[in-house]
Structures are given as structure tokens and as C-alpha cells.
Length: 392
Image 1 (cartoon, rainbow, N blue to C red):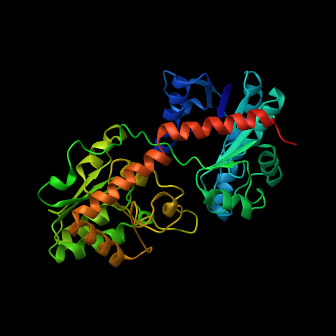
Image 2 (image 1 turned 135 degrees about the vertical axis):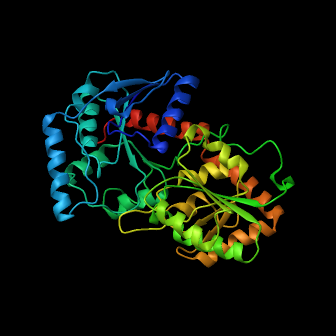
Image 3 (image 1 turned 30 degrees about the vertical axis):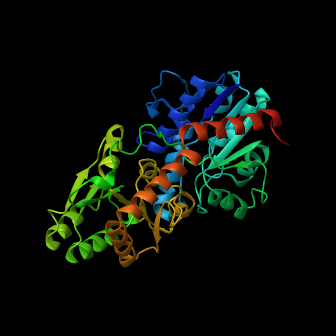
């Protein structure tokens, strides 16, 4: 089976997309499936296994995108504006593909171009999304519906993404076309340490990984950590990431006298990030829903779980689908610093509970989100679409 992944929009610095690429490489290495990634060269994609086919927006595509972004800057009409790739259909039609997989047709205008290419090839079409909120975009509604209706398989990262399509009237309830792959995690890389964490001595290490911005809930995490330290809880808070809140966090940590208990590491190369998970005892992040965003999956939560860490998280977005409350970790109400503090305190005081939740978390990722398991889901979805052809 020959598959084209038509996802041209530049995805540099997107660790979720990088994880999917590693999953595609695994598929090519372990099966007779061949995969071409049809992408804008600005993606900077590098792979010894996958073929990268170049497609770029033409002058009209770029002008239209710039005009829409300028219009949106003045009117704030759209939540999301993306480039089109008018030549995508022709580029795909020059290939020999059984299946074309593309992106969310309500957000990306090039999804319809991918459908054009699939029709010329008489190939199956797959689309999908991770987005759970209804966003306003300049994408043509008729074309979005056409892609959704034609798709033999629809990859929704979580059930909440499928519910969004249903709210838009683009997907029937309980559709057999929908599959839920989650995001692939390399469970060999994101693995527990060789030694038992409960044998460690010294302060408990609470790890947070995420961009330093308000929607990641740092205000509430800082308040919780401050409360715990003031109460004499022996812990250290390790924060990995950078962003607009860094200066404010540094000032607040200094004012609270927490500079010895808290370390802001800044950005750490993702190729080394697994080391941070192995050195930690608890993972905590408090994602918050905003008007235009919520946690669509939460890759760092799954990475932490794969590394055998108990997770303290908010109940926001799709997180409860990834982290099972009381099984893999502890979920607290959004914007509840007290809830975060109580959950962390419980885990600090109970090493056996930490070990139990961490083991459950590791097992859950192996069963649900491992690179191998997600690869099986991808291949099954492609086969289903290839057999269905372009639905009419």
C-alpha cells in the first residue's frame, strides 16, 4: 500500500508532528507500506526512511493568506488562518498512491486540494483533527463538508475532536469511519529509570514541562508550590520551557523566597527531555481552557506517563481521556491552586501511591499510545479508506 501524507504547512518545532513522523518511519520499517510526506520544504523534515515530496504555495496562495491575516488583524473575525497549496492536487496526482491522508478540512484549505488529488488517482482519502473547540476560519464550508463526506476514515486524536465535527454537522454520530489513535509515544525513549524511584532520598522532584504562558496554569502551580514549601513539604520544582511569563515567574519566585526550591531550566532539546522525566518523582501541569484553545491531547502528559510518573493535571479539554483520575494520576478542577497542592501533598506523603499510579500510567501508554499501537491504528485506517475509495 502506497500512502501520501499531505500535510504541507510548516511544522517545525511541533513535537507532536515529529512523533507522528517517527511512527511513519516505524510503519515503513516493519511492513510493506510505503509513505511519502507531501510537505513544504520549510518544514525541514529529515528522514532516512520517508520520502519527502515538495509542494509550496504559489504567489496567489501567499497573497490570499497575507490578505486574510491582515484582515483578521483588523477585524479579529477568524480564530485561525492557514495557507492554501493550490498545486497540491496535481502533485499528488503525479504519484502512485492508494491512500491520501490530509489535515482538518475545516481549518486547512489544502485538504480540499488533497481530495482533488485522491479523486484523480481513484485513491482513498483520510482526514482528521485533534482540535476540540469550534474555531472560526475562512475555509469554505462546502469544501470542508465535501472532504468529510468523501473520507473513508477519519482520524480523531480524541473523542472530543469527533464531537466537534458532530457539532458542526459534518459527521454522523457513532460513525464507523472514526478511529481514535491518540498521539504516538516512543515508549523505549520515554521509559522509567532503571532504579526504583521510591528508593531515592532527599526532596521529592515535581517536574513541569510546558511553554511559560498563562494557558499552562503557571499562576496556580506557583501558588500551590508556595503553599507546600511554606507548610514544610520537602520538594523541588523543576520547570522546563520558556515563554512570555518567564520574567514574571522569576520575580515572583524571588519575592516568595523560592529560588532554592525552584529551577527554571528554559528550553531543553527534545532529544534530551526524557532525561528530565526519569529524574523526577511527580509530573504536574495545569492546562487551562481559553476562548480559543484547550488541551487537545497533551503530549507531555503521555510522555510523563510513559516514563512511569504519576500525573497531577487539570480536568481541562481532552486531558481526562489521556489521564485517568485516580488510576494514572490525579485530576483537579481548573484554576484550583488548593487542588494542585492537595494532590501533590498526597503523592509526596505516599511513595507507594506514587509507584502504583506511575506503574498504571506506564501500562496505559504501552496499551494505548505506544508508537507500535498507534502505527497499527494508522495502517488500519488507511486500509479502510483504500477499500472504500472516495465516498460519494
